[in-house]
Image (tube, rainbow over all chains, first blue to last red; front, side, top):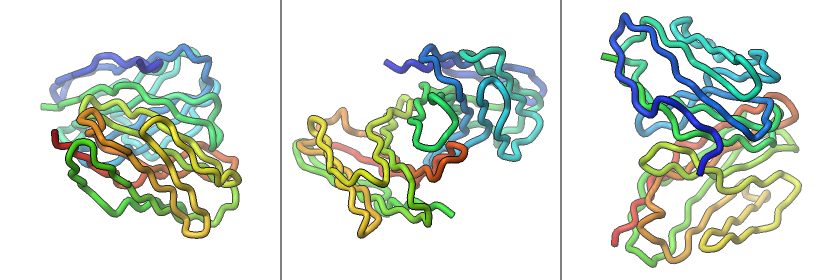
Length: 114
Length: 115
C-alpha cells in the first residue's frame, strides 16, 4: 500500500468552482511534489516543496495554487479551471529534494472539469 | 538536457512469456540516477527500482530483472513469466546531478498480458 495518500480519488468540478486536492505522507519526507498527467502521457512536474517552502514552480497557471501547511501535508487549490485541466493529479514525496532521492507517488486524484 | 527514450509504445504478450522493455537515456552528467515505475490502471505510480550511475550491477527481484549498461546508455527491464497482473504502463526515468529532483520520464511502455 502506498504511504502517500491523496483525497479525493475522483473530483468533478465546474469552471467556476473552487476545490482542493489533499495529500498526506507519514514517511518523514521533507520534499513534496505535485505532478499532472494527461492520458497516455508521462507525468509532468508542477510544483516542488522543500522543508515546507516552495522551491519549484514550473510556470503553472495561477488557477492552481499549492499550499504546504506542514511537512506531512500538501494541498492543491483549484479555482476557475478549464476543461483542458482535466487530468490525473499525482502527489509525491521524497526524503529531500535532491536528485537521487526516490520519489514515492500517491494513487492520484482524477479531476474532470466540466 | 536530459532525455529518456522508450521506443516501444504498446507491447502485447501471452501470459508466461517474457517481455523486455528498452530504456535509452541521454545526459552529460557523470552522476545520475535511473528509475523504473509501474502504473496500473488505478493510476498510482509504483516505484520498482533505483540505480545510480556508479553502480552497474544488474539486479533481480522475483520475476523482475534489470540490465544497466553505461556503454550503451541503456537500462532495460525484463519481466519473466509474465502474469495478467503485470499489465500496466511502465516508465523509465532519469534524474541528474545534485540539484533539484526533477525526473525526466520516458513516454512509457503499455504492457498488455493476454491470459
